[in-house]
Image (cartoon, rainbow, N blue to C red; front, side, top):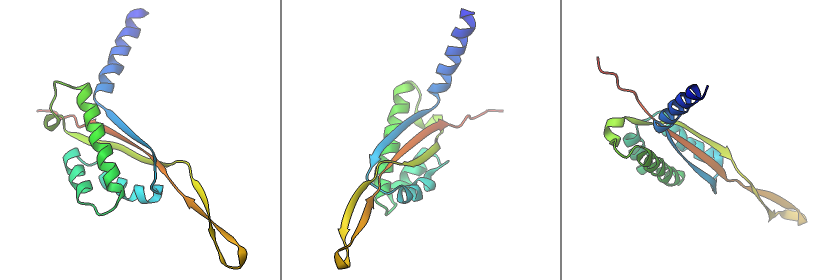
Amino acid sequence: MGVRKKLRAQQIKEAKKKIAFAKITGCPTSPRKMRLVADLIRGVEVEKALQILKFNAKESSVNLEKLLLSAIANWQAKNEDASIEDAGLFVKEIFVDSASMLKRLRPAPQGRAHRIRKRSNHVTLVLGNKIVQSK
């Protein structure tokens, strides 16, 4: 029984080597605005994704560029001997979840107040490598 468990643990460890992820928590941008940029790089190769984010005008692209670079660094830490160009890394998953909301009051006419919701988000990015099969 111990042998099977050990083999399974090695398989899981090898599978985890192929992926790397990074997270941003509590980023002060609304999730809706962040998703617009996240949708641009989903499923795209890493080099192309970095170029897309670098030349995108939206403010969220700066945060996502940092996150992508962090995920690449995490992948390199796991696979020290492999090179990024040969690995064929791409953005396997990226999803944006809403985080806590700061609630503020803005004065309104006739003694009323309107509630302002300052939204923030969590972003999770997973990198995978495309398996290149030689025939």
